[in-house]
Image (tube, rainbow, N blue to C red; front, side, top):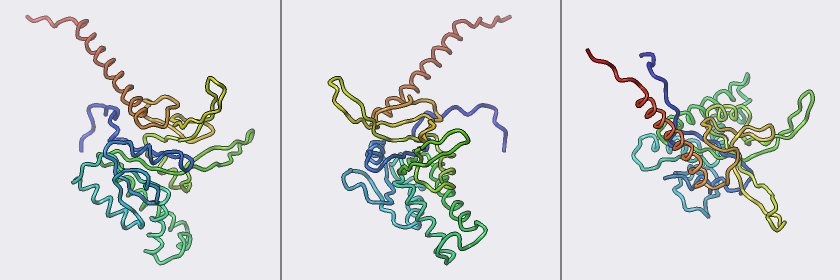
Length: 257
């Protein structure tokens, strides 16, 4: 083992990123993911009947592990792995641990052991997928949670994942994208609906973008997402080239004896 001598550059390839997408049912989360390049769905629930996509039906945690092993061997052309939904995947993991220890509920092991076993097993599998050279998209539904502070009370929209595993997923992903429908009036005063994706942190919903490449809100369209993400990357690359060019022209040549 050696200590690094250079800083690790930011990841600008979507194939290296992990993303959590959440929102109300039928808002278009699955359709959005289907627009990604060479996507493979690990389908833990029905919902792909109207979408043309590569999918592996997953009904048990054992099937999930077999699919992950096939993905890890690299003998395929998929570039994006979609878990739809990550909520159901966690439930399958919980059932697997309960069956393994011959208990009806994780609390039956006492002292939080059951919850720890489930979270460790789930985290191990998700971390493995995230470490592979493919994009990892995890779909979840949304729920409203009442937040009460000493001075205020408000409603916050968060993924429907259990709190403990939710913290694991939120802590590891590069982006949290909240999908919703906004109501607006057109130029004729007619009420219209628009599907959008929120990308920045808010008091009222869970979202975030560690890459800093996305605007606060974009249309819920994968092509728009790619344009915004790569557009920022192209601008930074252009600025970097201009900066290097300026340095080369302004630096004085070394004198030789």
